[in-house]
Length: 79
Image (tube, rainbow, N blue to C red; front, top):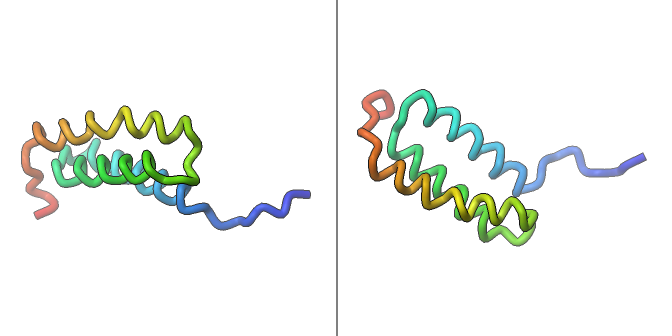
């Protein structure tokens, strides 16, 4: 039987938070959320405990999210 800790790792928590932010961005298109997503992806890119595949994918996506932040219209619902 596995004795793996039931609580999520920091990497899993950051990934879950990133998914949550991506879902919120889908509804609002808020540039602040896009910037937060880019920051989370940057964190995962540099996180020493993240799987190399996760780091590579996040590295490739962070520039796209920064670009989305630059082109998105300000979100009125979060002000």
